[in-house]
Image (cartoon, rainbow, N blue to C red):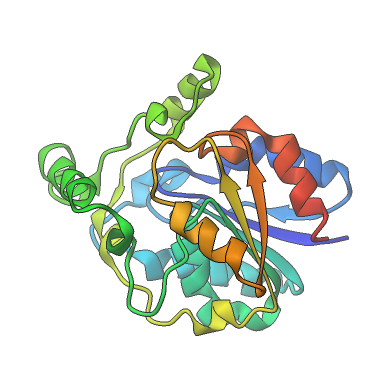
Length: 236
């Protein structure tokens, strides 16, 4: 039996893993899909002070309280920032670290470090206009290449605004995450934007990484849960 900890991306919640977790659990594995502070079912907890390290503490706290080891730690999109930061505390409990079409930050980098200036400015302007200066509005699923009308409706109903600080706070050190022996990158080849391509190319070219590609948009765990589960099951 393997133990998975699945960390969602920005504006999402643990709900987004539902289709994938059903498959993993049906195979007899333990799966934890925490909802991070201030989003999803915890949106009522949102404050301007919630940053990457708040979310890293959510993940590390879960791991420590559940007393779990040999974890397959997965971070989707913004979740790559979170699992990198969380590894500073829990790397010794992680067997494999998986970046699912996710940011792979270096020391001192924030999510904003990897966005085109116009996109970063757009997020900040959105927070000023629609989020009282500190909450970033949710982008439409079309932005991430989601095509199914049913999936779009499901995502739109559940996504919530997220603290601007989470996008601006840098990761102190990536050394612990990069020191985990098995590092995996899963690329969504149907993502219409170029943001994650450099991370995929880095992983593809490195002997230290295992690389996989899935032919769908950014929301892999929603659009192609079976294909994602198949990759994750091979890590068990």
